[in-house]
Image 1 (cartoon, rainbow, N blue to C red):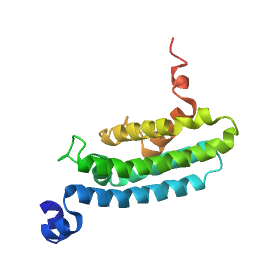
Image 2 (cartoon, rainbow, N blue to C red):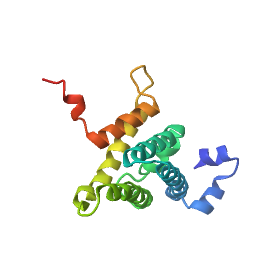
Image 3 (cartoon, rainbow, N blue to C red):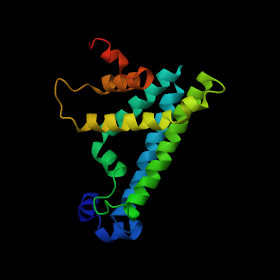
Image 4 (cartoon, rainbow, N blue to C red):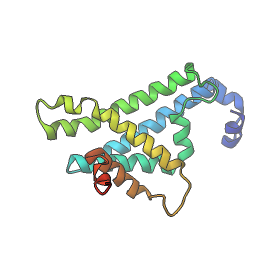
Length: 177
């Protein structure tokens, strides 16, 4: 908190007065950042003509925002280092993330329902949350990978994740004997 207060040009007591502790600050920052991400992902999805284009736009927006501010992304998507066992900080973070991911899952499911039609709810039921897990885990691994010629750029990574979501990994395995 002292480092944050110094960087902000104020005293630690100001942060403690408004946020209580690091968990309160993490929750407040998380709510703002996740709201911005949600808005950006929604805008990206609305510009799409097909469900696949919508998925690509959403994945791309997510990766762009995480890549733009990786430290902020990590701060709001990870449990507090001071509370790794699921106490108040973890609950606050999980609550904000849960709401964010529930909203994103609904954004993903809506066009899929419209595209697949009636009676396909079982097909869609679990898929949005599984898709979020794939995007989040692949994206975080991509963010953590050091820059190298083998590391895909953001658009290439978004296209690869979208392909995995739409057709799986089977096309990559067709040449394997």
